[in-house]
Image (cartoon, rainbow over all chains, first blue to last red; front, side):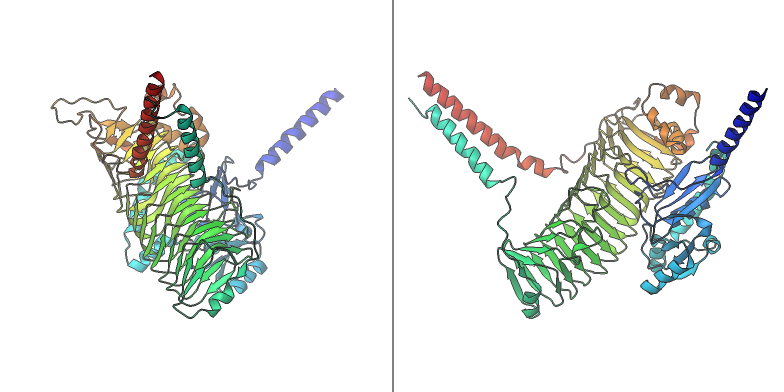
Length: 186
Length: 443
């Protein structure tokens, strides 16, 4: 009887710890030979611009630019997302998107020219702004309302040609129902 | 009668081979290193508009060219071990021609030549770099012609771009030869580019354009890179007569990628032996005409690409000719598909049966890339029939051609013909000599 109880206890502990491990979303390393941006297809460099999100089924999607992650969430919604990760500009350590501090300037160069950088704390963000003499600080909450503009949109502004923006909006609506169905088995 | 003794023939052949080896050396042993002459004092001493001729010896960089100058090389060599670019052009209207630059500092973000001013021209330079090649930063009206840029053997992130242009307009890039760098030609922003007759191999992307307008990319060749040409967020490009070949050693390799491209014209390109021949995503109002897409694993892949025209293209010997999702609204007709079942009732040369591309495979691999293991598996055709996907969303050719379209005969490879004549003459000569020789022996 005693051994039975022990066994049961052990199995309960095992089951519980297994469950605990699964609950943690964690950033995975970038493999430059294989990883490409889910949105723009470019190779993802193992650099400070790389970001990733994990879906609730622990599938990881990687992007070469924070802006492309917002392009993805705009199209597919937030419902299936477990966690989002960005990197500290200076140390490249992975951070939860909500814990990081951001700096935006249209002249900051990022792979898809969205111009937003992530930092682990206010001090390092301030340091960047001071060093480079440009950039506006943003919180993660402010990112949601940020108008994500890539180099192409700026080109549009320059040439006064709004066709592109309209085209992609029309696209999103025509796609939304299909992806609703898709996300079920993702 | 003896015309030639056999020994003479062998001797002649021997001498001929040695001459060839000497004339076209494969590896030149490094000349004994003499003490390099600092270049900056020579530039400082020159007056604006002067011509500086480099002797056949070593000069040491870095140097800043802050006035209009002509620097002509007589096989001279600039060696730079510093963390600065070997040459920085800050004044414009400078001409560099015919010398070698060695950039020995290993940093992918430091180029051998850095240009921040307009109106310069660089030609016949030979650049060997452990960093990047030539940077243009807001430098308009620049010509880069017939330069050779070679990077390090070490692959991966330590390589910089060969030609890296940021917000520069009216640029001519012709006849350059590039190997072992990150991107051969990387252009971000700017307007009006002529990129012709360049050759990029063993690099990441051969030609990489982002956010540019008005691009003429023609007669270039990209071989054995991750992607031949990445055309991203580009408007009004003409991509013609290029050869994108053998991009097949990376899991993400493709010949030509069009992402967010519109109002562009892609014609007469030869796209062969790639993992994916042409990849088109979120692109519209483009014309793809008379391209030869053959021997690729996947000929053309289209994702959310609508409003494009595909006509008179030749698809042959691809493992899978085409895959498409959400790309139904393209005007595709009169292409030749070697795998299409065709039936021509009225003798028009066009099939009355449409060629329909099944989106099934792309559909399942898009959400779970690992399923690509099933590529060309024998069970797939069965699965495709079991789970019919909405054909409306795929791609279909309304009237495939019965015979391959007449593509401009070898317009893409004129140089292939140049070698044939001399080679045949040499062979003919050897044959004649041996015939006469043996006839001589027999008598």
